Image (cartoon, rainbow, N blue to C red):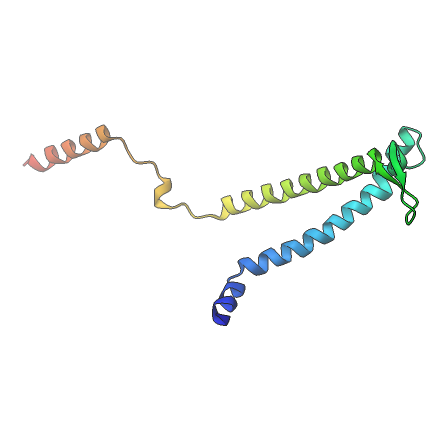
Length: 133
């Protein structure tokens, strides 16, 4: 069982997924900071509110944080985070697909099979060529 686990880890897929997870988590923090420190203040300036996360709050105040339980502004900021991460991941996957498509070798199954009538005509041509003296 240990050997099977070692083979599974060494296949590469597991390591690739682990690296992607760590890089994705770090990228998520970068995007969240970008949204909190750049995008939200810009939106708050445009709509003349002090802080985007403090806009349209509702519910009771949490005694530990001093923030209200609900915030539409915080939800909007999380939505902006999601859109940025999704767009960057789209660009990464799109670039990867283009790269692999350029460097992939065409397989024999990629060539289209010729129609039956063309095959039949080629056989007739070969038979006629063979019957000539």
